[in-house]
Amino acid sequence: MALLSVTCPSEPADQSYWNPCMGRYSNLWYTLVCASSSIADFKYLVQVNYCGLTAGSVTQSFPTIYAVPPRPVTGNGFFDSHEAISSLLSYDLQPTLAGFGTTSNSAINTNINYGFSFNPGLTFSDTLWNAGNWLGLTFSQAHGLTTNDIIVINKNNKTLNGQYDGTASVTSTTTYSIITDRQFGSSSVAETGLITSLTRWPSISYTTTFTAFNATRQYNQVALPFDQLYTQNYSQAPFLTNYPFNVGTSKQSAKKVFTNDNETLSFINDGTDVSNSVYTLTVNTYNNDPKFGGATAGGTAYYAYNPYIYGWDSRVDVGVGPNNLKNIGIMVAGYNYYKVSLGTASSRYCYGSAVYNIVDNCSPWTNIRIAFLNKLGGFDYMNFNYKSKNTIQTEKTMFKRQLSPGYSVGQREDTVLSTKSYDLWTASTEWITEAEGTWLKELIQSPEAYIVDDTNNTTIPIIVSDTSYEVKSQLLEKLFCFTLNYKMAFQTSTQGN
Image (cartoon, rainbow, N blue to C red; front, side):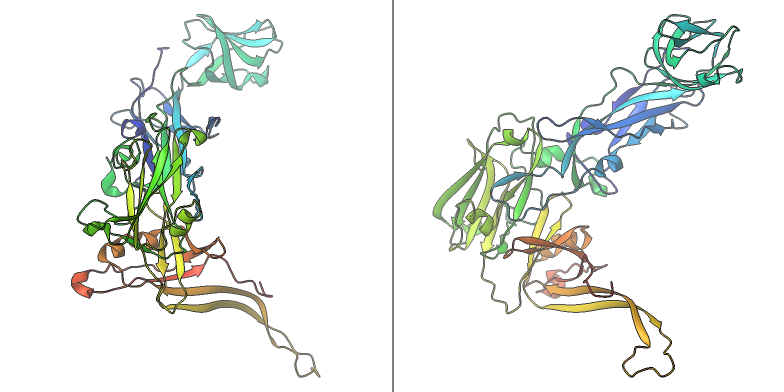
């Protein structure tokens, strides 16, 4: 039997060391190649490995072994690990965060190890006793098996030592014999049979480790290197949000917030940039919009964070809302604008920035603040402080009770067996820009949305009910707001449910 080998000439780490793993197009493809893939019953084998991002995390493997058939023409195998890995990830919602905080549920290190299986068509000519009473097999020709091979034994004579049949592991070999981990029985005659399956995991078969995180890759981003756009070892890498901040450009936009708002921004801390032993959050305050040359007012504040605390590779959130900053001793209330910038101890403005406009809530309606998981795996926030409406929806299961002769007035005939009750809401924003309207598509599409109660520091899960959304444009509507329909992600408790 010829000695086979499998290679992996392409893998996700070739494209990016940080890769989205959520969604339809977040494919984490591996290409497997074997020159002998046309032999009988050949399959590539894959096992997915993973570990957390914090120091001391233990590498674990999925118990499932994936069998990948070779393609008809090329014989290559293609394996996508994104569904397995995405099942381990969720998100971290921490709107009241003071300073920096790691997000342990949002990213994971991963790789695969690979091997192969096929039918070697080997015939053994007899069994062999080994010291320790282990079962050995002898062959009339060189068998080509190696230590740690997993084989399936199929004896010709099932009436004698039938327990030999089945899966065994090869523990040692010579040119014409092997020893297995099966116990030897007693036999006075030659026992023959076949090796019908061979599974082999090469001793060095691990692919390059990369970090998968809870973002999505869109259809037109098939070749996009996310690490070069979003990891903080690249200059001006933005935060993980698609809000149209556009800091430093002609399209720069300041996001409106209220004085008591909590809000976070997310970023990627990549371990390859060992020079960044400390991150800083720099806050500049302004009386006028800095887009139009507003001068800094009230001084500049800094807040430092050491990524060594959490290990090198990590997804990190930072509190940037007025209330978050207040809780770390940075006061922005009393100013009209402020800018937050991520940097290092030596270069405080080298990474992402965002500008906020502090406004008063002049609406008579109660503000409903909503956080939603965006396409880059972070949370975005929006105030719905204009017209809102609450509707109760109930579903009742009823039965008719037969009244007895001489019933008393007050006895029930139609009776409620069970009740389901939900709170439905419609909420609206104030006037928004066209760019904000486009950004809010992500709220309609998001699988995770919450009401953020800044007064009680709680989050309440909701389900967005809207199934369609017409993106507004200033060419057609001039002024417009955003209206959202949602329901609570839980039932209202009643005596009938």
